[in-house]
Length: 140
View 1 (cartoon, helix red, strand yellow):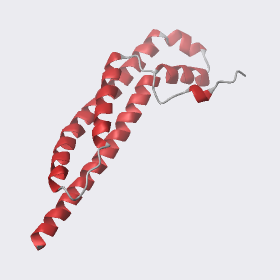
View 2 (cartoon, rainbow, N blue to C red; view 1 turned 90 degrees about the horizontal axis):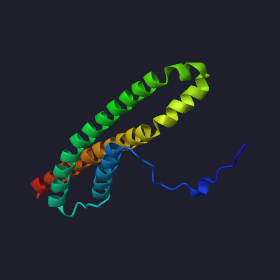
View 3 (cartoon, helix red, strand yellow; view 1 turned 45 degrees about the vertical axis):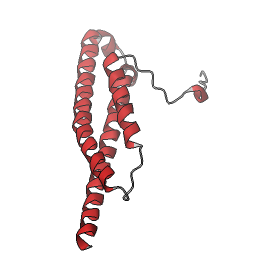
């Protein structure tokens, strides 16, 4: 069996589909914004951040649904185009071929799904922090 040098594999995912590349670039921008720290000392920044995240969440949801649809469409096209060849292969081999074919879509779905989950949690945390600040201000 051939040995593969996995130390040369970087975090740069080889994406070739132009639509997926655009989604990853947009996700990179969202991730950069999510990485900016925010503190309770500046309540206005929390509100502003919540507004921006409330714009990002629907966009991220839309991107996630689109890439899932693209993945299903690509799978259907691949299966139709290669039905005879795939039927001749064992289930294990055909599943590997299909998984390899869908790699870019799977990576993109996984990334957007994790980002959506993280962003939803950040959104909830911000609402909690803002409520806490309002409560503290009301008690003064």
